[in-house]
Image (cartoon, rainbow over all chains, first blue to last red; front, side, top):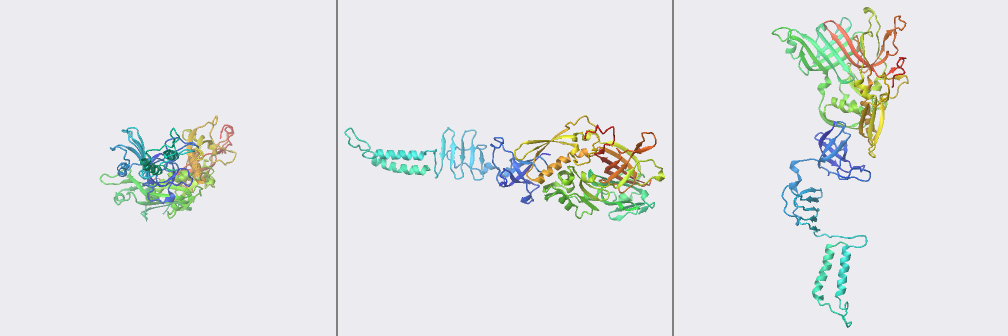
Length: 220
Length: 398
């Protein structure tokens, strides 16, 4: 007999590293000791499963889920098929996106989102088109309603790089170039006499702040 | 109480002997290898209505029936029953609730069942052994199994748990790929055994079907016999199955053909299944899902496959009536000595094809106080015959 039941996740550290989780079927197993609870597989959605492709996402410990028991009462083939629904702990009212200052005011039922244990939220307002991620430290990235792509790393840094160079390295080189160009002997007039960059003193602060800004925003 | 210097009958009601005249009561005690709990019906003439008035027919009352033969004191049938339901067969006197009361009884362990949620991390035979502790069975016959795993009793009583989980998943290396049966016989003996070990027992009686004078009838004389077959509508699907499992390692599907002759697989080469068929054709297709990492879990998977061959075990049957014989209870073996007319037209001769050992599937031991008749009715069956029947030997496929 096939039956659908509620369960709670007890352990996600499968000793076989095969994506199984230990569950407590409720209410029947409520008082069972942990060592007699079953390890069960998960029916994921996404890529199909072969030896070279698949999905590895596990529900968090202590969360509520729904399981399909395909061989009741033998309980040898149990599969997690979805999250459970508990009205009193529904996630919407326990979630705030106000840290995303570039996000417009949101009205229920928007936005749709997925909130993880560490506080990371992937969100999408399907009406306004706003789409982004709010990370646990308050950093975020967002594709806003007008099509702009914004990244705010708060007091942390960005890094853009490939195998040979990085954006920081490029900008630092440009800064160096500008500094050289500012020096008295960098340019000669028609009579081979050094030219003077007339904005040196006023740009000195700008140049000094540029170094600070680069080191503040960009990671080596 | 000894009646007619032969029958030993006693009825106890809630622990007290009823001291009844045996002619005023009738009863029938039933056991079967297909039914975990033995049962009985008990009728008594309540001419004044006082029996019912004093609660005899009330659900939950305890009735013990002792039924035996004076010459065979060790074979006496003794079972504690509980009243499951009751009815008046008739109300005989206008104005008085009198008449014949029939009590429908069931083994008293029915009354002790508790619906529970438990996990057992043991082999199945141990789970059953623990269950039988302090249950006052006369004897327990529990075959050891090799299936240690976690077994879940979830919101059912233990009797249901045995029928739906333990019997289905029980596996022993000695079972020779045959399923298990769990039943309490009319001697209050608890049995948890594979079909192989049931049929390997020594026969308890040899029953003969030969014409004799009434005064020459003996305990092992067959009074009436009716041969019949289970029929292919019930068991044809077991003849040859395509069994599919799935490897837990790489998800590949594994096909295997299993025939009825594989359950049991070890037998004398002369043994044949009495089914004539033109060819061996696939008659069933079953997907059993994943195999398992642990040997014991794979043993239970084999047990479930074996269990689905259960209907193949009872091909040829006989419904037999004998004088009351307490040796004959379900799960035991009898040897039938059957005869046919001699081909040369002179008298009768033993039928080597039909004679042989048969498993007792079902018994009813009855006492009719009105006629003072004590009868045993049994159903016996077998899966294999010895292919001595020359006209069939080439046609029996398995």
